[in-house]
Image 1 (tube, rainbow over the protein chains, first blue to last red):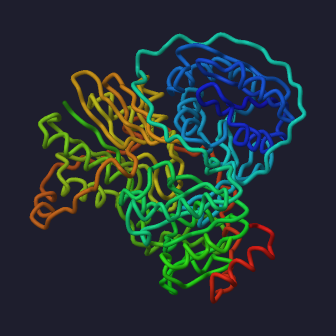
Image 2: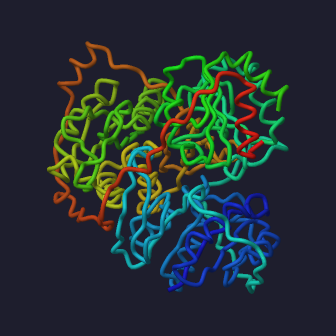
Image 3: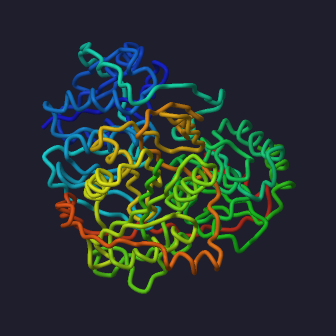
Length: 308
Length: 252
């Protein structure tokens, strides 16, 4: 058995954390080949080769792969599929865009957000916003799946896999890139941060969300938000933690002014330590919090920033 | 131009799913069911295109149990023009996999020839986030997933997508599949007169066999279990106590 794993490459750089977590998840399934694809992907390929447990790295560079459009990336993976029993990727938005397309082209049913690998055919995954864990056994010849990175510890480094360059596919005329609006930030990335500070509807406004950011910066943390905060325009979409946003499992998760809807809990309840600050003592967030503080966030958070 | 919107009947957004004691699945008997929230957003977007004069007809399709006709009536009450129900299961616990759904939708689309399909990005029951992408693959169409903005312009659509790190805008050639994310719009509530009118709108009933699609699952559900329970910890009385607890744990 052999595994093809699509590495997470953004603007030529490998997201080492996400890729190494996915590598750790699938190591038991066979030799792992990491595919790095992009307009520039050689540096990413070199990084991927250092991940422990990677047997081989394939680098595909070409304009058609420049913005991870689903159609050319899926075509590339399908063209390589013959050699592999398992085809997977960390469950990022890029992979969630591409992998179901790959699966359908191979007449396989994709298995999304795998949180446990039981054996070569059997996988665990959360359903119903994490309120149930489903164990499924695939009868497909090739298994195509995405890996929920928060469920796995990253593979270490120290590997020295061979890197092979392969051809990029032709550009597809089905879609084309127009522009990216990516937030520039010096903060750690949300899904790999050791500490996450999130704000909810209780924060009240975009201006007041700065308080959440100040606390995050004091702790060297990433900033998250509940869906309510994002919908209200207090925080950008890529900060959303929850069933349909990002899934995080940091050492410390601080939920400020978040009531704790099941959809939010789905994205953070595997955090090691959860702190909740909310003025409503009945808020469901307190049912999962290790440390709950019933207080007005506008007095508690500045005090916390001062005392940390 | 015709817009087709697939909709799924799922457990209501506000209901907490309970695992059945025999571990075979989530208990859906006597549970409130509604339209998948992302599909509501997709229906709303299609109706807005029609209201803006950019689409002539909105066709909604649901695949599943017979009761999904209630979901289709909801979409008709919101403003869709007609509905197609493809009965593919006789038990609500029998979830049709996205691959089979995509195959049936492909067959429907071959007949209906819409220029645009807007689907929800994910169903909140199986959380697969797959049907739109799989359908695009089977049709050989372009895909624009996780859309927060959609602009039609002649033979193409400009779509802003919610991705890790921010927003990406792409252009897809029509016909294409767009999947709706949360921020695309806020769906309307159907008014009572429109709910009455919806009862008279056409709803065709078909079966998976009519389209020659085998819906048997590729993924056998071995078991469904409760996630590890997380219990409530303690309430601290002050910021000082919180800080000292976190220091004790060595996380700050």
